[in-house]
Image (cartoon, rainbow, N blue to C red; front, side, top):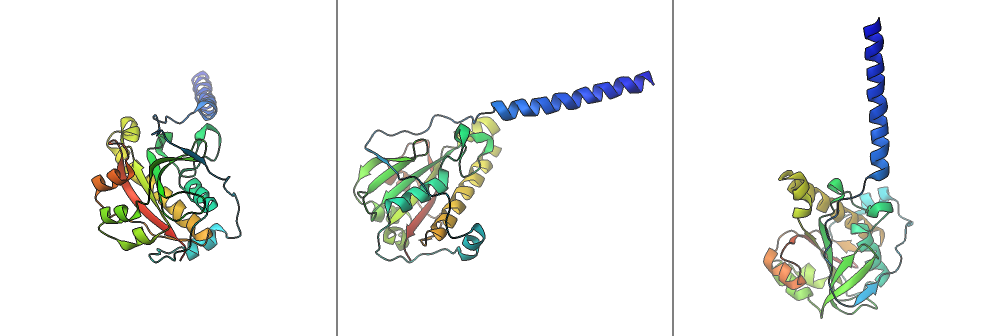
Length: 238
């Protein structure tokens, strides 16, 4: 009896310790974010994103399609704000974002190749989730250069803008080893689907593009050598 009582006390102690440990981790956990890519250049503060709409998630899922034909109608800066927030926007304390990330390592970077946006000069921009702003890297319309880097897929040049998602693999693989590569790809898929659904809710069209010359895309973006492009997503009004 004494042994059973002793074992019961040990078991109860283990359970209590596990609960307290879980509570402690939930209160003290912070994302292990590597130093983000930061560019020097003019900064454009984006409008506050909207947090509700007349289209439900279910409706957006039903309506979502890959769209490759766009009109010449321009996008608004509010559209850009919403799309970038959906891709990698910060949604809460400790810099948690709209897309889940393994260990909070956040390996993704998002670029905007703008050509036809009201109130925004054509150029290549980098999105900064902290502050919800754009940094201009290059001035001028680079949509055709990006199209040429992507096997001349014309919808990239026709779209009002192109979003490009790149990854810094080391942010995740330094923590998870080779399997971290898989986690990065999963995260990129989460972000791209967010863009698809947000574009649908805004009445916009987009398509995910994965066929391109990595080096030429990085050259167009003037991105860092540590980055690997994973997605190009042209966006425009159908």
